[in-house]
Image (cartoon, one colour):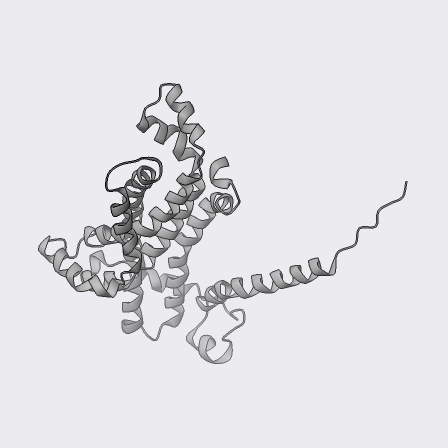
Length: 281
């Protein structure tokens, strides 16, 4: 028997080199931020701006927690983000399913109305929104952010879920009906498990939008006990502008939840990017 000589194609080598270069470019900013958070001001700006820290400054993280109270801002962001994600899913999942799989009067009008939200800049509605929040006596509360965040993310989230629901074979629902399942049971027990990749994608995008949002929060919230992380970081620059290492420590800690969320849902997101992944679940 003759052995087959397996040779790597030049195109494969070029692709691997390209991917390695892209990986380094994308990953380096994260490592730079970590190194930044472990340096003194002198290293950051003068002697060693891009390399490893010569002497690790763990005290930067201590200063970020004690002097800056980052844990308080962190807690506020977690509460606002978690409640907002739950609210978004509670509205988007049944709405997207009903518009995709059911026939009812006014469906097209409602869908188009919601889609228009994608084309309205936040800056256009920020003044009436602030007046509405004031009149509803929600100023300087978590719900002053949660309610707008849920509303802002409905349009894009519904597009993701509607596309996924449309890819589910109708035979799945027909089989459930034959077995005696109602609409609610079919939706919860049959359909939702099939669209887990799309739900994971929705959660990631919505979480990033809520976690990093600054404009609305900076206008609607002025009380320190309710401020979220982006507003707190902005205040940190103004009040503690000389302690750049501590600010870097704050940025590192602020990025941890987004990394955790992606690691939790990364497998489902990969399935969502694969043809037929939303159906296979």
